[in-house]
Image 1: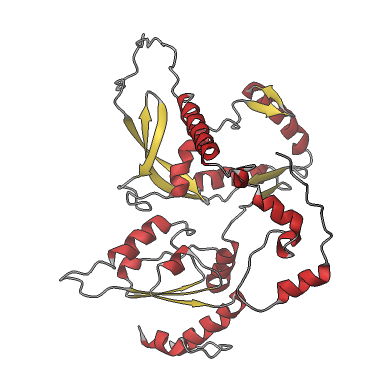
Image 2: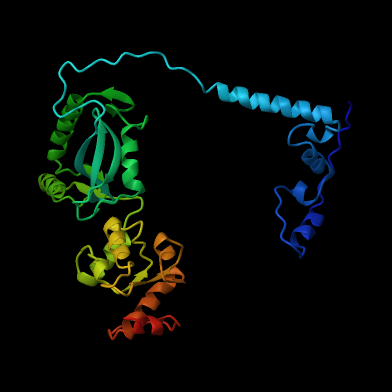
Length: 352
C-alpha cells in the first residue's frame, strides 16, 4: 500500500496570531502547526497512535493487531516472574543480646528537622532500621511523624551516601582526616583562625553550641556560619525586633479558642508542627465537656496546608499583611499605627 507524503506548508504567523487572540471557547494547542491546522500536522495526528492504525480498514487486520498486542503484553508480564537463586541462611556464631531473628527491636532516639529535635521510635530488623514512627513520650512529637521523619530511614540506604571519608574524590581514613585537621589547626593558631570557617545548618543543641563557642574562643578570628536552604530567618528577625533577642515563641493551641495565622504555615513548616497539629485537632472534637470548636483564621499570600485547614482564609499579598496585622492590633487596643482598612478586621477583632 503506497502513501503520499503531505508536503509541509509554511505557517503564516499573522493568521496564527488572529487564531490565538480570537474570542470563543478556550483551545489548548501544543505547537504553532497545531494552532494553524497545518495539513502536515493533521496528517501526523491521523497516524500517530499507533502507526498506520487509521488505515486498518478490514476487520481481520484489526483483530490480528489486537491479538498481537495482547500477546505482547502477556509475554512482557512473564519476564517479571523470575526465580531467585537459592541462598543459605547461617545462624549467628555469637548472637547479639536481645536479638531474635524475625522479631523487631525498637529504639527511642531523635531526628533533627530545621535544627530542632523530634522524638522518634525506630523499628530495626537484625540491625537494619526499616521504619520510623513518632515517640508518644516525646513532648514535641506526641507519637506523630511527618513526611520528613518517614524519609529519614531512606537516607541510610541512599546509594549516593558517602561510606568513607573523601578528599578530592579519593577515599581516606579518619586517621588521615585527623592528621590533616591537626596540621591545619597548627597553622591557623598563629593567625588566630583568620582563615578558618565553619559552615553548619541550624544548631539548637546547647552541647554543640558550647563546643563551637570553645573553638571560637581559641580561634577568635574564625567565623561560624549557620545556613538553611529554607530557614526561618524572618521569624528570627521578628523575634529580635519584638523581644530584643532571638527567642522562639511557644504556642499552645490546646488553650486557644481563636487562632489568627499571618502567613505562618504551622501545619507543615513550623519546627513544632507535629505538636501544634495535635493540639489544634484536639480542640476540633466536640463533646459534652467541649461543646464548641476553636476557630482558625488564616491570612496568607500563597496556598498552604494551614490555609487549607482554616475556617476562614483571606488571600493577601505578602506586602499587605503587615498593614493588616497593624489594623488588627489597633482594634485590640494596642498603640499601633500604620494599619489599613479591611472588611475582615472588624469581625476578626469581635471574635475574641
